[in-house]
Amino acid sequence: MAKPQKKIIITCAVTGAIHTPTMSPHLPITPAQIAAESVAAAQAGAAIIHLHAREPQDGRPTPDPAVFRQFLPAIKAQTDAVINITTGGGHNMTVQERLRAPLELAPEMASFNMGSMNFALYPMAARHSTFLHAWEPQYLENTRDFIFRNTFKDMEYTLEHLGQGCGTRFEFECYDIGHLYNLAHLRDRKLVTGPLFVQSIFGILGGIGADVENLLHMKRIADKLFGDDYLWSVLAAGRHQMGLCTAAAQMGGNVRVGLEDSLYLGKGQLAPSNAAQVTKIRGIVESLSLEVATPAEVRDMLALKGPSTVRF
Image (tube, rainbow, N blue to C red; front, side, top):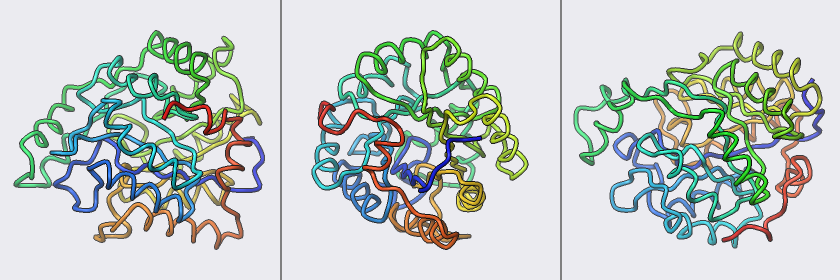
């Protein structure tokens, strides 16, 4: 079984690299917007803030550490939230580009993708007849012929340089059952150590589907592989976000919300902010007679190095 928890961790993924500006006027694009959304999400109850960067002019994903530096210090100054920087980047980036910011900034946490996979966004292009920016439709369509690369060599490099070199610990992103076995392989080789923070991801085209049977199966396999040496968290794409996060919370799991994963607060209702999603899932968690973890408690639960050791 996953490590017993008295409190539930809420992660908020503020902007991501999946949705494009046309899809929602509430998607934060500029550094000022990303900082404000992050601070508000933390104030609403998110203990971990997961961050990507975007070009301020047109919202396309960017790996540039200089853009991250335009919002990270403001978030750190105004909250005590754990800052988690992406190593997944965007669909137009090489592995080396994806690692530029975290290697320079040495965050407490970073995402860590547990296998190469099809990661398809192209069906989203058909939902819009016009786009705000010329890059958007091609960015989406290119995923028809795209493999999200995360080889074992890539993983080993990240663990050596970001994990050992920077003291960063990871949110292990598992998009399918095989990714759990990949993580177990790394643990068996002693390249990773517990407590593992395992993020089960549902509803990405190319990964495991978003239904309760798969949620239960992912949890059973994780329990079998990792025993009590891991903490389990769940995110689900689009309309599945709140339903599967609620099911995970009922099972003692942690949850992730945010406009990276879903643009909606309810059926047909665009979320006005990341904080609105955090507020909703916090209300659900507390209605189940569960408590929400603070950033300080999360740092203890995940054995993080502390905010004074980052490079921003």
